[in-house]
Length: 371
Image (cartoon, rainbow, N blue to C red):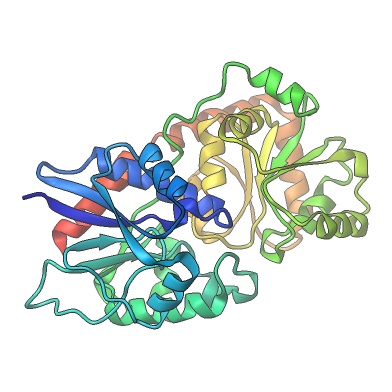
């Protein structure tokens, strides 16, 4: 009889959570491929339209099956917040806090175990900038996790340190990093894709949004004296971006907004950037940085603890007072010195090779074996 690991799949189908959804899908695929002999992965999913079930089966080849809740996603999240649905017997892994967390006997029923994931510490350190599910829901779920989870997975030691400061998980915290998407490569028609998107020959790229944590205003101020366009990729409120642009006095013709991109277009845009900039004051990991590393783009980032941990010496890290001025100097160094840009590109590619979804999946299997 196979040993089953149940894996919560809802993040994959939630269009409001593209970043965590992509990571959840990458980890699910890797877990399926690295399953030990005699083990299998079963998807746990909220009540969804039949085409979504079919989509999951297509996107996750090798999935042993789907266990479908009678509750839709919102109702299931609410029920799990209140502890109204208990965890199934056996191993359960969630790539977020969305999980059935309740009392179970770890001593007499050690086979029942629930591991959940916390992607950042913002619900404690920067709560007004929390995105995705509501802050109240996240706070309720982290309290349930503190009481009932057998393990809390975090993507960086920076998040682990924040958890230790704000919650009592003891030795239940496990650091398992994210990784570049498997198969992430520069498309063969990258130049054609960049032309079709209307991008210039040289540009600065960022995934920053108007969220105050991302410090887009500082980035606009930093780039103002530099003769280079800024390309913003990802979903953002155009009205708020326009207000930030006007406040900074940044020329409208130098700001290109692309919105959400498909995987191949995004890889082309990241690889083609003269520099990728991540100015956030705090994040839990820095997947945009890591994928830019993998695609050979030089990176400039803030000194957020998770970024410092991630980049090692493969990026220009901006710290100290006068953030916008420091950001401007770092970007200018990359733009003006081809040798420096090339060194960062090579160092970034080397750094990216230290991370893989296969390695992360094997760590998840080991976590559940240890439990």
